[in-house]
Length: 134
Image (cartoon, helix red, strand yellow):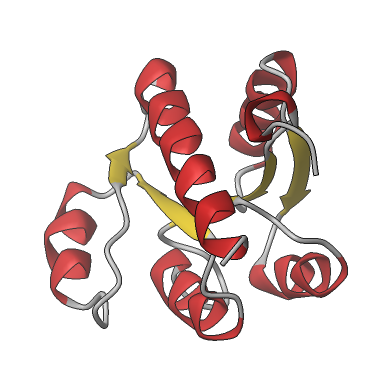
């Protein structure tokens, strides 16, 4: 296995807003990430079964469940994966932090600062890869 920093990060973005999904996909691809997208958690589950991701960026408010519920379920199956929650509802941030079942995720309010999102993604990719190597 080569140098971790030279390998592109693999990220899954889940959002039911097409414009947000496309904008984030373009942003991460521009920065060298291997990007997969899903417009709902059913599609995301299928992608998770077929690929190994370093980071998952999930919208908090999804049609089938919350991004937080998806990430908590994913961490039970693949504990190395790290997540970031995006939300357009400030109140969701306050509620969700208390419901995180012991998992802690950064919550960023939409529209999010893309530099801050990238800082979190880079940081969490390093954590994910270090854990998956154990």
